[in-house]
Each structure stands twice: as structure tokens, then as C-alpha cells.
Amino acid sequence: MTRFLFLAGALLAVAAWAAGTTPPATDATNALLDGQFPDDPVRPLVQAECLLCHSGEYVTQQRLTEGQWQKTVDKMRKFGSPANDEEAKAMVAYFARYWTPDLPPLRPVLAGAPKGSAPRK
Amino acid sequence: MTLDRRMFLKSSLASAAAATWWLKAPTLAQAKGTLGLIRRTERPLNYESVRSTFTTRITPLDRFYLRNHFDIPAIDVGKWRLNVHGLVEKPLSLSLAELERMPQVTVEAVLQCAGNGRSLFSPSVPGVQWRYGAMGNAQWTGVRFRDVLALAGPKKDASFIQLQGAERPTMSTTPPFIRAIPLEKALHPDTLLALKMNGKPLAANRGQPLRVVPPGWVGDDWVRSLVDVEVRADEPDAFYYNPGYRFPLNPGAPGAPIPGDQMKPMTKVNVKSLLGSLSDGDRLRPGAHELVGVAFSGEAGIDRVDLSFDGGETWTAAKLDGPSTPYGFRVFRHLWKPEAGSYQIACRATDTNGATQPEVGVWNPGGYLNNAIDRVQVEVQA
Image (cartoon, rainbow over all chains, first blue to last red; front, side):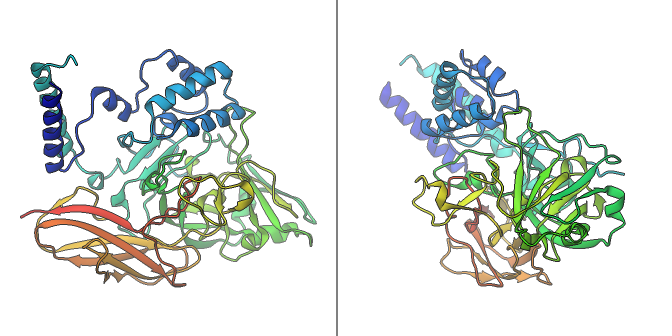
């Protein structure tokens, strides 16, 4: 079975390479690349304590080591995130588990000029 | 392992469908009209231009990148005042009408975010993950900063000009966005307090009604919705001035930490070029194709742009639209006649001071000033 999966994976990778794309991602990876937050007890904390000031892409576009996540969470607490020590520790673990340096970049979202772009009359 | 052959086949079919969709999806370079931006973050607004934007000297307003630290401030333009104080003979509080009555000057200059290209650094660094499009070239119209300073009369100890806009962080504990430029740059005749961008009054998310334009310098000094100018003898003690927006005096190994006293504020942008007419993954027919892109440098013109189609073995000079300007984009063109094959197109600019682009950008903890040679991978198929 393992050998079969390995061969199948290799075939898919070759097919993807031939088609000029990276190998297809798993559903979980796809969700991350679309900017979703995986279900987890920490998720409501992120909602309440990070997204007060900024949108979720500030987290989901980063590709950081645990040490970098620790520094980022420390900085955000200095800036005013209400996370306590225990919550911050859980957040660092959550971020470092999913948004790692080897995760491919967030899929780009095309947009028009946002509200407030019209020149003043 | 619980995956069986049937499940594997199902997931492979789903993957194949996804791969097919991906192949058919238009490349970002083909995005036209209203979808000319890539949303990096929704709040605050951070949007970058798609690569195909960069085929003209002037960047259209609706495709020009947006960069914000905080929410866009609500400004009543009729009540807005610009306050100038500190080491001056006569503190000022100027209305928009008063500024509009002063002599107006137009300067063409590239505005580029310090972090443009940040996501291309390895190892990766935190921050908005800009790729290529956090830059644009506009015509800025307004008053000379030195004309405003002359009204206030800087005292002899004046050395730095502290700048603050109307934007405020959500939390009172978050540092405000405060910057400073040396007095010398503020007094340069091309440094403006701009009221217009490409001939139009500044929009709400472009820094209405007035922003600083220190041409040739990195975007962090182009403070928007300017309300407070403090003339100082020393540099401010402000997060976004120190430790924020600093570059190593002597860059170290990629990923290595650099002590704070070994960092300095950024000033000029470095020489850079970008191919606009093609994007990674584009497929072309053999035959003639005009390649078009832009090149620029800080406080210097563009002397040449060279293109390579063989991984940097050989280089060909592109034609440059004229004239060269000290702060703006210079458009380059090349008629390329490829045969079928796989090509990496590289472009490399050299400025009028002889500075040129490196193979790899100088890694730094903030992910700033990445001006590596631009490379685009395309396929030419009969």
C-alpha cells in the first residue's frame, strides 16, 4: 500500500510538473491557501484578540517559524492585543502549526479599487 | 493508512479537476479593468498592482497600490489644518485654501513601499507579503515643502522634520505612525506637500487632502493626510522611526539577527526593473512579441535595461522610451522573436550612477528594498 501510494504520488507530481503546476494540495492545505483558519479551540481567541484591529490575512499570509510567531505575538500584545500569557502561548502553537515557512503562498485575490478611491470633487 | 484504491482514485479525479481549473484560470497579467489589484489585506487596506500594470510611464489611479498601517481617517477637508511647530520662528496652522493659493509645482516620482518584494526573500520575514506590485509612478502636484517651512522660519538648530498624518491606530496602546526626514530633504526644491495625484485631488485612501512627496525616497516617508509637522533638532523617539523601517548598515547572512544599533533609516529606493507585459506561466506562440516593462531608481535616471533569455548567460540591451527622469519610471521595450521552448526572461536595470540590480536581494529582517533581477518563466509553443 505504501509503495502504491508513493508511486501514485510520484505520478501525480510528474503530471503536475508536465502541466506546469505544483502538485495538487490536500483539502486542508487548500483551505489554508484560501486564507481560512482551521477549526481549533484557539480560533475564537484569534477572532476576539487579533481581528479587533486587522483582518485575518495579516495571519494567514505569513510563513513563519515558531520563533518568528513568538516575536509577532509578543509585539501584538505590546500593541494592545488583550491575550493573556496562556492564550498567547496557545496562539503561538496554533500559528506555528499551520502557517509554516514551507506552506505555499496564499492564493492571490483579485480586486477592484476599494471604497475611498474616488478623487475628491 | 486507511486510504484505499477507490478513495485514492476519487481524490485523484478531484485533484485532476482542480489542476484543470488552475490551468484554465487566467493569469494575473491578463486581469483588466476593475480587477487591477491584488488584495493582500482588507483591513487596513493593503492592495498591490498586478504585474500587467507596469507597461506605462504613469500608473493609472485605479490600478495604483494602496498601503495603510491603520484605518483610513475620516477627514472634513473644510476643517482640516496643517500645523507646523517646534523649532520655528512662527508656528503655522494652514487651511487647504491657503495651501491652494501658494505656487503649485508638479513632480513625477515613483512611490514604492519599502516592503515591495518582501515575499520573495528567503528565509521569509513577517509583514504584508508584497510580491511585485507595491509601487507606481504618478505626477504629484502641490506646494514645495520648503515654501511652507519658509513661512514658519526654521531656527538654526533645526535638523529633522517630524511628520504625522491624521490616521490613528484602533488601540491607544498601538504606536502612532510618526516618521521624520532630514531638513535637507524637506528643503529640496522637488520635495512637495502634494494636493493632487495624476491631476486629481487626493482621494480618501490616497491621503486626502495632502501628503508628503520626498521624491526618490522609500514610501514610509510619504506620510498621508498630513496634519502635524514638527521641526526638531534631533530624531523622534517613535516606533515607526526606530526600530521601524530600518535597514542594516552591514547586511549579514540571510536569517541572522542584526542588533538595533546596526540599523539605519532607509532613504533612497534602489535601482529596479520589472517586466510588465508577461507573467510567470504565460504561454505564447513563436513569432514577434513586444516585451514592455518599467525601470526606476531613487534620485537617479535609468541608463540601461538589459534582458536575458538564457538564464543570465547573455544580455541584450532593451530600447528605452525617453527622456530619463530622476524619480519616475522609464519604460523599456524589446522586440522578442522566440522559437518554441521554455524561457526564463530576466531584466536588469542600471541607473545613471552605475548602480545595478543584484542576482538576489539583500536579505534584511524587515524584508525591505528587494531589488533582485526580475525573472519571468514563460512557454513558447507552436
